[in-house]
Each structure stands twice: as C-alpha cells, then as structure tokens.
Image (cartoon, rainbow, N blue to C red):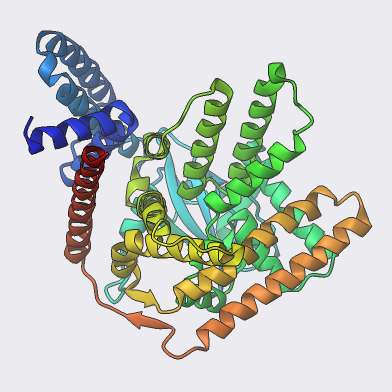
Length: 508
C-alpha cells in the first residue's frame, strides 16, 4: 500500500466511519453556497419532487455501483442543501400587500436616539419580515415581544445608503428581512397580544432583571447581566460594546458554550437526587428540557443552538452509554441549525462560533500538550492561553475581514474575564433560584454586582493600555486564502503525526 493510499484509507476511516455527520454537513453547506451563487426560482412542489426523484436515483445507482455510493450520497445531501435554501428563500416576500397590514413583534424592541426599533412578521399569504422604527412615545416604549400591531402600509424595500460602509441590505436579507418603515404614532396601533413559548421566556427575562433592580444593582451592571446571561445586548450602550470589542472580550457577551455548559452542570446538580439507574432517562430529559428553555430565553442565537445541540447529544450518549465524537456532534449541530435556517451560514455569529469551537477542539488540545505545568495555577493559566491561541488561529481571518482589527491584549483579557464570567453566570443563577429567600438572594446579588463592576473596570483598564488594538485591512480573498493555508497546515500536521506514530510502533 502506497503512502497516498494509506492516507486516503486513514481519512476514510476517521471521517466517514467515525464522523459521518461531518460529510453530511459539508455537503449540505456546499448546497447552500451553490444556491447563493446560482439561485433558481421554481415551484416548491417541483423542488420537493426533484429531491425525491434524485433520492431514488441515488439508491438505484448505489446498489449497482457500490464504489461510488458514498459520492452519490454526498451529492444528494448537497442537492438537499440547495433545495432547502430555495424553499426557505421562496417562503418570504419582499413587501407586504394591502393598505393596512397586521404584524407580530418578533424581537425585543431596541431603543434608538429618536425611535424604537422592532422586528415584525407581517401576516399574509407569504411570511414578510420587516423592520419598523416607531416614533418615541409612551405607547412605543410599552411594546413587547408578541404584541399584534396594525400598520398603515408605508413599507419600502431596504437599500444601502450610498455613503455607508456596512452592507445592511445583505445583513438584513440573511435574516429574510427585505423591507422597513418609519412609523409615527398616527400610522400604527396595538390591537392585541399573542402568547407563545418565546413570549413566556421574554417575560422570564424581564422578571429576572427586575430581581436585580430590586436588589439595587447599578444600571450598567444590569445591562451587562442582560447581555452576558440572557443574550440581550440591546441595553448596552455603544461605548461599552466598543470597549469589550477593543479588549477582545466580545465573546463573553455572546451566550455560547460557556453559559450552556454552566446551565447543564447546575441542572445535573439539581437533579442529582435521581440516582436510580432506572430513572436516569428522566434526569437526562429534564436537563435537556432545561437547556432548551434557556436557549429560548437567550433568543436562540447560532452559538446557543450549537451548544444546546451538542449538550443534548452528549446527554443522550451518556444515557445510551455510547462514546461520542466532538467533530460529529459539532457537524450535527451545524446541520440542524442550517436545516432550520440556511442563511445562518452567512451570519458572523455562526461563522465565528463554529470556527472557534473547531479550532479549540483541534489546535487547543495540541497546544495544551506542549507544556505540562506542575501547579494548579500554572495549569489554569496555560489552559486559558492554549484555548485563546487556538481561538485566534481559527477566527483571525474572519475577525480581520469583518472587523479589521486585532485585539493586542486578548490573551490577558481572557485570563481575567473568563473566570469572572464563570462567577457571574453561576451567581446569577443562584440569585434567581433563591429569589424566594430574600437574605440569600440579596447576598448573592451583591456578589453579582461586585463581579460585574470588577469585570467592566478590568475591561476599561485593559483598554487604557497603549495600542489596545491594531487596525488591518483584510479582503475576502485574503480570508479565504488564509483558511486554505490553514487547511494545508492541518493536513501536514496529520501526515507528520501519522509518520511519527508509525516510527514509534516500529521502534517498539
């Protein structure tokens, strides 16, 4: 067997056998990108029919020519990605019809200098998502998720300002939002409220923030808690966001695996009284339900969906006593996320989230093995450094392309803020779960207040250092080339590692 044949055999065994979801997700992503480059408008029934016919064709060909069965299956999932994207795209219309339209508020209102920005879903034959800017008054300030509003139709198609540097039109289109309107008081009215699971989650979020308000926390700390624990950054002012971004700590404000992991650990602790193996399934179900409830409360961002799916799969694997591949669960999370919303592939949060986790899983473990500190503090610091370097390796091309900056002190920032974020999320949970015990709840609320203040002060101090960030111009082509080089580096590392392992076996 030649070296090339051995490499192909290793790839086939490691990827296809142990990580089939990686191939499925890759094919699906190729289909989504293909539709973005070559869109087609056909009736929905025809897309479904073509997908079914091609499935039958793949099954027949695979039985006759088993050597190309995997390639045919890969092509079917790619076609499935193309069709799924087309079906989602054709589900939405650009502009609503009618002199008056009825719409449901589908996101928490965001306060702007002269208006309240809300996202609505307009009722009609097709879904029509839109952005509305309500003129500031007491009625607009009282708008909540789930409210039903009646608008006089003055919607216009979203277009970019000729002097704008940010492509807002493409950003909105990725969320299937194509129209917007400014609505003075005379152009709208509230006619009802629709209650669903998400509206209850939003009500819980409001209740949680009121708990901290009653404990007299500083307003800026309440805004930080809303972002860090519940994923709502609308209350944060632009200066605070800029400080976190400059220091390289924006990932702390994005609810992700850290937060979901803490929630999962707390739930396993709370349901620790279920020790009978016969009822282990009940414990797993309760924990998974709690994770997804938290995901709903935080707004179901791509990073939260990814972490929730991975935690759920890990819990099911624990119940079934199966070993689980991190790459497989990550790919499964990506597939389910994109199946529900294919345009998430083009969102910054989706790309950064999956690039970061992939890099941590691959490079993080390899970097951490380079040193073995003998003290707990040394182990902790080296672990943070290894993870931080791994994240930078995986996300740097994207960060440079989208933001054009490099945080100079990101390693120092992570060493300081990650433990503080862990303390904050944990004490927030304890404060809320003990809210019926005023003395205990107040005690932990004070810890939350102190930790939040210390965290923001630490970020401010880091920003006061000389040259906290470096500005770099980076194009899309450079970003793609960087990832291609990174892919080649991974292949080289794997080849060298295989050769070293074979030499060690020969020596033994």
